[in-house]
Image (cartoon, rainbow, N blue to C red; front, side, top):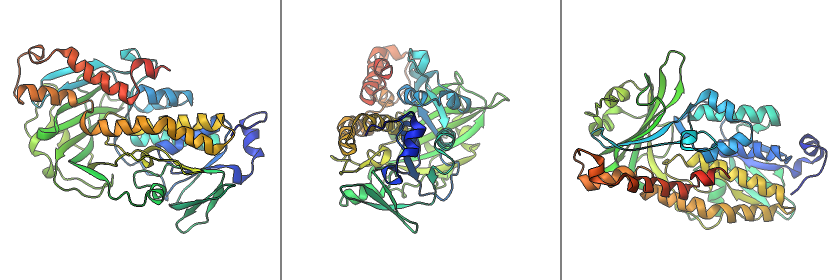
Length: 421
């Protein structure tokens, strides 16, 4: 799908609307794809179901392999203006005892930083860049996709209540509840629920630990939390993102906007007053609390159907662990744009994209269920029976804990050597 001409702008102006790439969904993956396509002179339009963009969600970790791609699109300084550059991963047991710590991002030798950032801020940086580079009308709001059709010449995307759109190919970046995925996998069924519920919130307070620590505390069976800063304020305070995981036999539908109640989850954390953080106070002072089930979908064996393919959560919805949901969508976008630029036949490019990305992301989906990074704490919990210890070195060789972390980095594609490619 190579284009010729004097520059990206000339290419875009010279192509008919039917030659445009249709990107369905303007979340992290869809917006990144639009920027990556534009950088290669490949015209596209985005269609978003929401009638307007609102600052929803909580925090997200953008690891160096994701920042590598966003930096190539000229976004690193914008992300740095909003987020907190993380310095370390820190692991603690439920008694607040340090289990393991290691530097992260540039402090661990990566070329690119690790940013902990509010999801709304990340989305704003991406959306502003799309509107600036592709034009203010590049994203069509209020376009809820209900399905796609295709023939030998192109695709047509159908929307609820508005006119359809025609293009050369369609990329379904329409999220966890993707209508396009459902069209091609109609018998897939309900999401996979692993018996864990989450409550998430943000709290403004003074920094803790290094002021840039991505912190994991406890285990799912007895209560687990992930806590890290996502905004820095001029008065020295920070906006702290936190989430909890607890076993549950049932769950509500997975809607990020479902309000949560403290009384439904506080019990395991009621006495978590450590010398480095008062967790009950952190929860009590939250600006808001959201409830969300830990759900994903079983990996599927096919994303690409002729002129249509899946991307991001539509392709590989995974547990929100290890900072990999958004990161893998960004890596999808880079791979897809690169391959579309490198192939004369767009259908061959879509198939090459599936061949490159399906197997690695499927492995991450399965690993996030059983051995995410906080498996480090689970390991120590099993060895100590959940009791306090005198010295972690008497419990386990820290090198074994480092090996768990390194194994996850290898699977997720952000070991130091891989992230520098």
